[in-house]
Length: 378
Image (cartoon, rainbow, N blue to C red):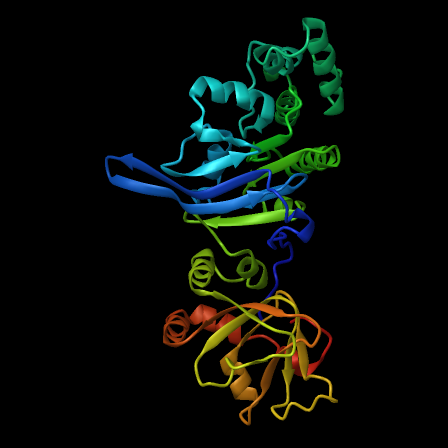
């Protein structure tokens, strides 16, 4: 039986209420670096949207491109091709000076290594962005900085230099600094990478409270347990985003295997009650439900009998398993009440890949079958 990860982020696409205008839109972002060894593509056609009020995490192995993705949004780095739109602004169309001014008002950035000015007190560090953005009077800046430091639990340390406080306190001060100009968006690149687990949890608690206050947050992290606390997670591997349905439904596959399925799964749909023709035609295939309900019925299609099983969103099956357990045939039908949406890969290429990656084949075939009950998902 395939084990399910004990801590699993929410890889699913954003909910329906986020279907309006995205706050951040990345379109076909490619980033290629050149060095003595040649060219290296850190991002390979990334397209993603982030919506107001979301707390999104980006996870992936070291070198997968997650920090480069964050740098595209902040404008710290420039794409080789593609666009990033935040609100009505195409970020990389701005000059460096204009981008700095725009960034100071619209984005708060939290770095892994804090990046506090070592010769300034925590209070002065938090006041600095307001000074650079020419916001408030000197007295107003000090008042707001003190308030922010109290908010992150540092009200009694405001006159300390960064070196005189702990790493967790430095990161809290960096978050206060990121909030100084009251930006609508926070971008946090590995904000807990240098913190112990308890302090890391406190930082994520703070981020969650900021979402409640109307902020939108994108957090790059390597910590799956922290990503599980966000509202949505993007999984990146080798500069590409893995299909969120694949990441959630098949968490025990390695990232290269998930990417193969991401490249080869094709979107399909069927009307409510429509019979699918994919399962019993002799080809090997994988079907993953992404909307509606898939029903497994006797081939005679007796309507007054309940289906043998109903597979909801996130469920999947191998068509060869159907043929193995139902050699006389079985009928796949879209649920009677709603259209069915699913991803499908089938044919010789999939069969060859399955045969050449025995770990995948063992994972897909070595689990309990879902059609022993009609209670819902796999």
